[in-house]
Image 1 (cartoon, one colour):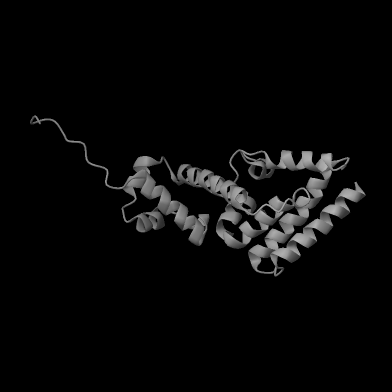
Image 2 (cartoon, one colour):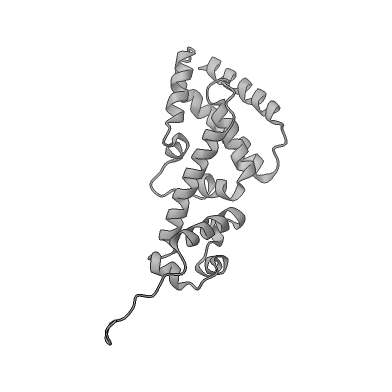
Length: 190
């Protein structure tokens, strides 16, 4: 190396380490706690690498948010499928997600931080699960399956919020029965 040239400083803190730490912090303590100082402490670095990679914390939270969406989609895809009435497998997964991933559930479905996505888009995901379930309900003779989904979703979201606060103490079997009865009532009223 010549006298006037500078050697590029080796990045010891990788973007993956920062993102993994931010995601873990969000899961453990909530997205409100993902601050530059707390993240730096979790990642074992100063705040400099964070702001070298991200313009600001909002940009970083946006990336963590997209990771949370992908996590939720995998969670739903990996959830048991019982081939119950339409909307029930998704509902069961959603309620279980609220119980298992409280902070991530708050970020995705209760924070108002959705970027450009509606709740419908979040739920539907890349797989188009809602569209498939609406088609399934239509095939079962439901005349207005979109309306049935909306009624069911209000009920399912309420159950998930109760699960989030620890006020939902039904077993999975009891939950499935409750959702099945609700689906039948909504479908018949339609």
